[in-house]
Every structure is written in C-alpha cells, then in structure tokens.
Amino acid sequence: MERVDIMGFDNFVGQEKAVEIFKRGLSRKKLNHAYLLYGSEERGKLTFAFLAARAINCLNSQEGACGDCVSCQKIEKGLHPDVTIISPQGNNIKIEQLRQAKAQASYRPNEGEKKVIVIKEAHLMSLPAANSLLKILEEPPFYLVFILITSDLALMPYTIVSRCQLVPFNQVPANEIFQFLKEHEQLGSFPEEQLKTAATLADGSIGQAIKIVSSTEWQERRKRYFQMSRDIVLNSDTDIFSCIEELMEEEKILDFFDFLESILRDCLVYQSTEEESLIINIDYLQEIKGIKNKSYRKLLKMIREVERFKKNSGLPLNKRLALEALLVKLKG
Image 1 (cartoon, rainbow, N blue to C red):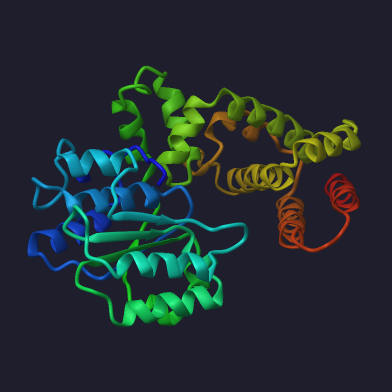
Image 2 (cartoon, rainbow, N blue to C red; image 1 turned 45 degrees about the horizontal axis):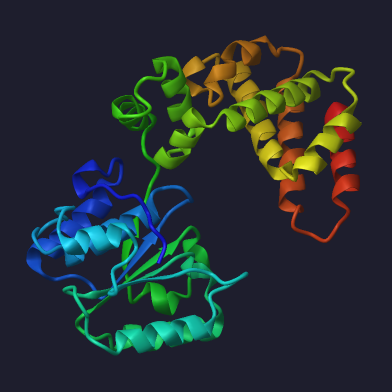
C-alpha cells in the first residue's frame, strides 16, 4: 500500500465541511458505509482519505487521530492490514480488483475497528467493476467503510453516487492558502510576495501552491511560457515554428495553452476594468498592463480559438498541423 504524508484534522486547511462530516460521524459512532470525496484535482482528497482511515482506526482518539498509536503509525507508513487502496490499472479500475477487495472485505478487521477501502479515481471503474461494487454497497458488512475519490463526479454512475455520502472538496480561498504557506515549517522562509503569487496561481489548491513555491523547474517553464504568450499576443516577429518545436518536444501543449488562455483572460479583464485584484497571473501584472495593442474583440476571438483547440485536442488529428494552424490564426 502506498504511503501518503498525513497530519491531523485540525491541520487540514480549507476543507472544513469534510472535516465536520467525519468528526460528526466519529463522535456519534455513526459512520456511513461509503463516502464519495469529489472535487477538482489536487484538493487534498487522497490525503484526507488516509487521514479519515487513520481517525477511524485510531486506538486513542474519538474524533480524530492521535498520530502516535500503533494503528496510526501503520496507516501513515502504508502498512496497516485493514486499509486497502485501489488504483486504476492502465486506463481503468478492473473487476478483478473489486473482486479481490470484496474477498478481503468478507473477513472482519485484523487489527482495527473497521476495514477501510479507498478507491482512487473511482470514475474510472469499468462497468463490470462498478456493478460489482454496487452489490456490496447495497448490503455492506457493519465493519466496512468505503472511501471513493473522484475528480469528475459527472462520470460516476448514479447508482453508486446515491449510495454514498457526498463530501465536497472546494477551492481553498487564496488568503487561506497564503496563510498556510506562511506558517509552513519549510516554506515560511520564502519571500511573502512569492507566497502570495503562489496562493493566487494555485486555483484553490494547497498542493498546487506548494509545488509552485518549491519547484524551480515549474518557475522556469512559466517564464518561457510567458515569453511565448507575449510574443503571440503582441504579434511579434518571433518564429512561431520555434515555439512549435519547443512545445512538441516537451509534450506540454495543453499546459502551455492553459497558460496562454489565462494571460489572454487577464489582458481582457484588465482592459475592461483596470482592476489589478482580478488578475490571475499577478506576478506578470506590469507586463499585462503594458499589453494595449489588442482590442477587446480581438482578445476574445483569440480566447475562443484557444478553447476550440483544447476541446479538439483529444481527436485523432495531426497535432503539429493543428498547432501550426492555431498559432497562425492567433498571430494573424
């Protein structure tokens, strides 16, 4: 079983609703047989699932986890026999994986209060796997708790969703992320301006904010992406084919166009409102303010072209030709 670094409920920032749901169930000794943690990626769902598993089987605490008992230590190290993790194999979760889990669930816990089965990316279950899970959700043993995790609730079968207690994982406000980074033992020494930028760019994700602050590779790539985006927006004489070569080489085409779209959006917003507080890429505020040669209509058209490209990116078309055609349109 994999290991995930975990803290405690009281230190889990920004998801008070999730904490409240589990604390209430623990204090009343009325845990649901299945929970579905849903929300965008990097909202802390997997970390919370491990935290919940630890709290459920803690030997000392009634509403959380002591972190010191044998059970807490085993779960933190990924060694507890009553906590099982199911991850996709290839493109989906297969029925064989659910059958193995059900076989394990047929026996009472070895050491803990309950058996906990965590299913990552639950929306990737094959139809046979989903049907297999449904059968046990309809008549679960009292000692079993399922924790399903998904980044796309719309892809989950309704029959399974209806049998789970839903636990939403929403965006964490930027000010809470900033405060978390500032008080973080290893990150608090970074300049406040850098922490504020990371909090703004993290799209409500503490995990993403930590990556932004600590990854020099991410920061260097961001600089390159901005240079390329500025050249496109300003219609400079930069050879667009050199941009194509770099993007094709890194295989980060969609990452770049996500960034480009956010720059175009910031230019559009600032030209319309001149409100600095609405800018996402706050670290490039002065450069964005300086982009004035594009009309509102032109910026909006560019955004729509980028969105169309991203929407069609999964189709079996020649990526290089599609990329060349898009960049020509954007610079035209």
